[in-house]
Structures are given as C-alpha cells and as structure tokens.
Length: 122
Image 1 (tube, helix red, strand yellow):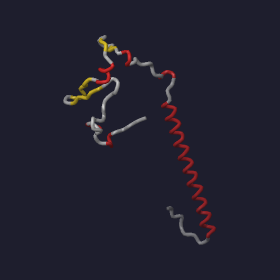
Image 2: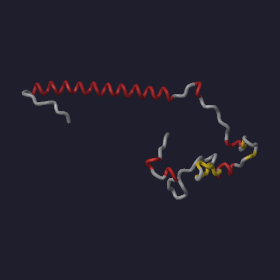
Image 3: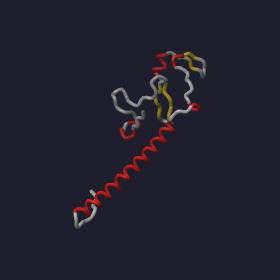
Image 4: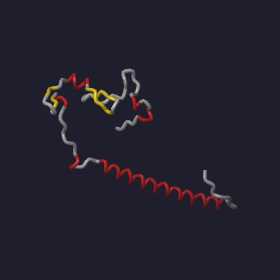
C-alpha cells in the first residue's frame, strides 16, 4: 500500500490517485519493455548461427575406439570404466549413460547429495 497523502476534497484525492496510477503504469510498461529487450537479446545470442552449427559426431554404434583401434562391444560401452577425478576419488563413466548422480538406492551421490547443489538445465 502506498500513502498518497491527506486531501480536503474527494476530487483532489481522485486527481492524485489517477496521476499516481498513470505514473505506476508508465513504470510497469518501461520495465516490461526493458525485460523484453533483455529477453530478445538473450534469444538472439543463444540462437545457433551458420558458422557455429554442430558438426556431426562419431556415432557410438560404430563400436570402435579410435585412439587405439580396438573394438569395444555394446556391453562395455554401457558398463563404463572408472575415471580418476581427483587424487582419492574415482567415478564410473559410461560412454552410453554418462556419469551417474544417483546410486542404486535412489540417493544422490557425493557432491550431488544436497538438492540445493543440483542444477538441472533443459
């Protein structure tokens, strides 16, 4: 609630109310216009241009490890391998499934154990 003051007549109060109403409407419209410009700018920056189009990636179905020329089975791609992420921590990384954040019992793992730390982007 905003205090507009004390007025002697109803007409004075009405005039003051109308002027403040117009002032607030102008502020709201200016803020919306600013937000629309920011949104439009963000949209334009996030659009993919011709020079940044994705290059086709090598399919995992090729079942070939190009670094050493050894065939990798579909099952091995699903199972994954242990990757050292720090001196005393390892995580199992699967080429098909990525890095797990949920354990076998449905609880979040390690640094993801607090929901405040979990950020899901779409």
